[in-house]
Length: 198
Image: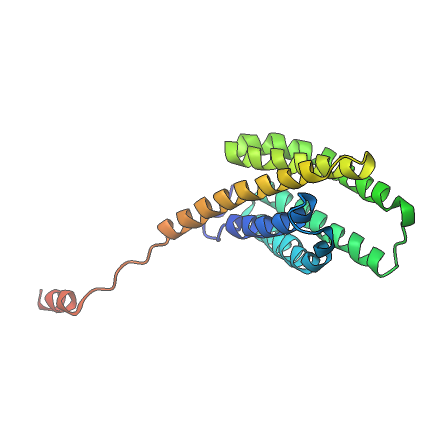
């Protein structure tokens, strides 16, 4: 049972997802050079990691198991991916010629674990189900690109499609929250005068 007195973190979580997913998959779709991935990683960490974890905490407080699981799980993905690149760049992790195999195995695990999220998301809403389906395809594409040498564009465009769906869902949730909390217009001086005379 969700506590309706607390704000819904879905808008914040979806916004973080859209930004992190877009920045991560623009290079995979070959729309920007692969080298810019390193420039995107801080934003991916903050949006996909920190903001996602905040949404996870708010989902926990509200008693929202699905939101808690999604925000926590994928916040862990973006954070661990950042650490994967950062620690390799700093020489702490030295994969050498096995870097693709290591990253591919990492993505394979996330691909497999995403399957029940796809099923659960379709039970929530069709658009959520489609979002997670394309997240699954993005993970699968990244896995195949690193383990089998398949062109990463499949995973990249799947990730961008999931981000586009996330943007639509975020906009819907944001507009819905504004409609619920529309402030009442302040009474005019004439209204106040009329009330005092009555």
